Image (cartoon, rainbow, N blue to C red; front, side, top):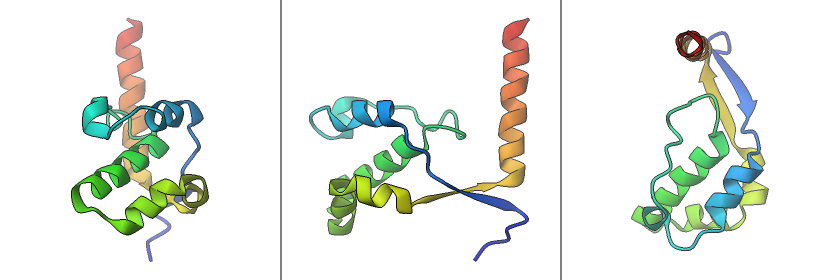
Length: 104
């Protein structure tokens, strides 16, 4: 349960191009190089989620995590992003300020 006045629930959007790069490289994430998906918390949701689950499987040997990764097209739509309303507002405001500074 969550206070719906304080958060927004939304599906994790598909990011086909990003996932194509991530899924079709050999080795695990440590051998692919780190991908900074935490810099912009309003995008890269699917890639961030896949990376988190991949790390979990790598470090724990999770059978359930491996099943999710192996059947990503089936499981991906079941995830929901929970974004606190005020956090989203702050992220948008910070991006506007950054763009304003970049435009000057």
